[in-house]
Image (tube, rainbow, N blue to C red):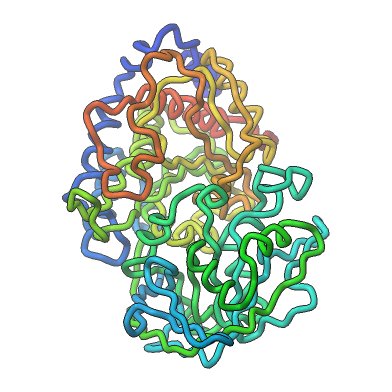
Length: 524
C-alpha cells in the first residue's frame, strides 16, 4: 500500500466519531499520558525553574524519553539547545519605593502595591527623581487610530500603562473582546523601552489581565529570567519592569491629585492624552544577577522526500520552581497541568508517530524553556531554528490541556488567524465534534504561549483549549484552571479527568499526520 494511502487510512480510523466517552478512555496511550504528567509534575522535579538544579533533571528526563522513542537529536547531534539568559533578583531598602509629591513623601510597598524586576546586567539600577507618567494603555497603533504617547516625552521617566486594550471595555474599538497583541503586557514593556523610558509599570486588573494579583507576585517574587545579549550586555533594556496593583495606583494617583476612576474612564476613550503625574521617585534597586545557560530540548522524526520541511509540536517545560508557600505550607510550584500535560501530549504524539512509516516531512518535537518568563525559549529557537522558518509548515502548541472532561466542542484560540482552522474543523467533524472560534480572547491566550513566536515570523500556528459542551454534563471538570493556575496546588491527582485531553491530543495528532504527508503545494 502506498504511504499516502496508509496515512489517510490511519487518519480516518483515528477520527471515527466518538460513540461514547468510554471509547476515548480506552486509548492505549492514556496510561502513558498519566505517567508522564505524574512524573514531570512531581515534587522530585522541584517546579522545573530554569537555571536551577531542577532544570538539569528535567531536560535530561525529556531527552531520555525522546531517545527511548528512537527520535534523533534536533540540534547538531544534541537534544539540547543552549539559550543564554540572565537571572536576577531585585531588592529595595525596606521593600518600599518612596514617592515624592506636593504633600510630602509616601511609599509603595512590595509585594502588596508593586512587583518589580530588571533584565539589565548591573549590580544596581538608580532612579534619580524619575517622574511617573500615566500613558493610558501604553499603545501606539496607527491602524486603529490610537496613540497614547502622542505629545508626551517619556524618556527617562516611569511609564504606567493599563493591561489589555481599549476593545476590552468598548467592543467598537480595536477588535472588541478579541484582544490584540497591543493588549499584552510584553508589548507595553517593548514600547516603553523603544521610547527611552527608564521603567514601565503595568497597571493590573484581574478581569482585564485574566488572572489575579497572585500571578504577578508568584511570577516575579523569586529570580526573574530574560534573554541575554552578549553584544549589548542588556544595557538597552528597561531599568525597571513591573506590575502595579490597583490599590497602589489609586494611592499614586491620589498623591498626584487625580481621581483614579475618572482618569481610567478617560483613558479608555479615543483621544486620551498621557498625563505626567508630577510625582517622582528617587531610589536604587540592588540587583543580584547571574548570566548562565538554560536549554530547549528537541528531537526529530526525520522525513523522507520532503525532509527539509517540518511541522513542529511544542510545549514548554518550565514552571516557577520553589517560591512563596500557599495556605498549606506547600511552596513547590509543580506545574503538572502547566505544562506537564503539554509535555505529555507531545511525547504521546511522538510515540504514536514513531510507530508509523516515516513521514514525508520531518516532525520536530520542541520542549521550550522559559515560557513563563516571556516565551524566551521559543523566541530563541525561532531565531536559531533547526529548520528555517520558511520551511516550517506549522507549529501545533500544547499548554495546560489537562485535566479536561470530554466535550462535543473544541475551542481554537486565534481562530481565523491561519489556514489551520479548516484542518482542525475537518478533524473535529470526523470525531463527531465541532469547532468554536474564540472571539472573546479577552485574556490574550493567543499571545501567551510559545506558538506566538512562530506566528510573529509568518508560520501558521495554533493552540486549542477544552470546550464547554460536555458529553457528560453530570461530570464536569473537578479542577477548573482558576483553582490552580500558577499556584503550588497545580499537582497531578489520580482522579484527573483526561478524556477531553486525550481526545484533543488525538485531534491535533490527526491534523499533524495529514500535514506531514500532504502534497508539497499544500500549506495551511
